[in-house]
Length: 115
Length: 115
Image (cartoon, rainbow over all chains, first blue to last red; front, side, top):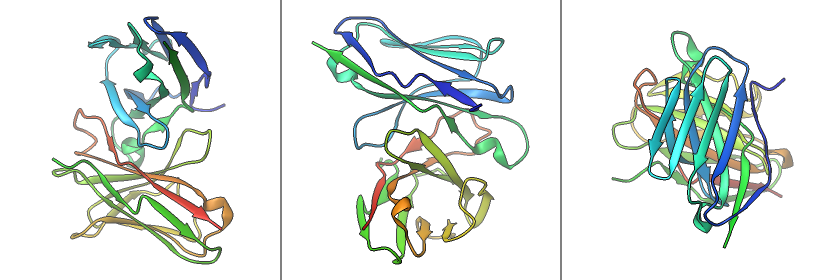
């Protein structure tokens, strides 16, 4: 079983739709959670960063963390064609040891928003 | 404020040659991470370095691969005697110390092709 599971999609939605992207994880040591957007042949771009259960909002994006269920989500409101990209969840643990700096990624969800 | 700079953007090597990938972190960032991305896959952790120290190399193959982050200059990922299976996109990320509440910033990557 992978430490982080993410549905690879692909996901295709019409412009203006609400998009929901999800990841589940098995390692209870994960405490920091990130969402990245990656356009084709580009580097990942940090969208959201959270460390506590609950919601965090930034413009059209909302990140949600439920540590009790080991489940995180990214919601995109009023989706635009420019949101078409691969979305990657990532997480890391805290505390001592050498592995706490390491990010573990989901496999990414390919999103297409069509006009 | 330049982001994470990686070069070269594209690198072609014949089987058996050496590949050197360079990464300059964001200004003020003292921690560097290298990731590999194969087509249709997420990012896989390779190595985590601070200046003059390898903190975690658990994701790096034991043979042919090495990484350094000297006191002066960029971080280098070195692949000796490349094989076709090394063809991938290699991404570098940087951050302040991981115990700070901060996400990681990625570079645009180096696409290595082994022919």
